[in-house]
Length: 207
Image 1 (cartoon, rainbow, N blue to C red):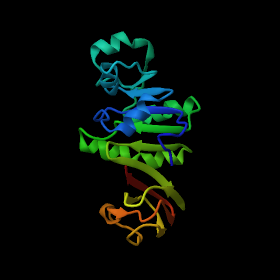
Image 2 (cartoon, helix red, strand yellow):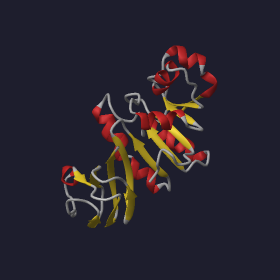
Image 3 (cartoon, helix red, strand yellow):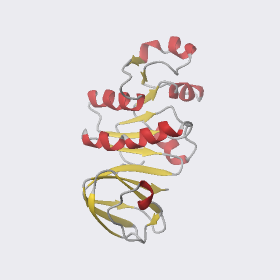
């Protein structure tokens, strides 16, 4: 699991709501390398920052910033994937493995669900990736994982294709969830918890 104190290779700023919570803001402010997804660059630039790369098909970036930052825009016209994935693939080509994504939620709910669901695909590409919102962090997982947390932190589990679920350190027992809502609103009872399963799932942990 990526922690905001870890040595993150790069940060992707998506074109959702600009972060407001101190943790995603700190991740963005401390980033060594920032890739903005199209219109996400407008919000980043408006706050006095300059991205390393702006990526996408250019459909939501302002005309002013398209001209002003033309030398760092990486156009990807492919409509078969979204700008977040284009940014991920770009960072893979640069050798980045530890990636934090911020600004991927808010605004359109369909984009939010799409961005979150793609995390498991990124993990299949060998990435250590997490998506930080204003309320917590989404982490794609596979098989057995142990995560540091704090007593009382809320934990939700969203099954992708896993089976044989079990856990330690969570308040409520888990099972082979068949609906997205079934693994939500659990709670950590210690300073860490373990989930064991066969397959892929997403974990959301509140701050």
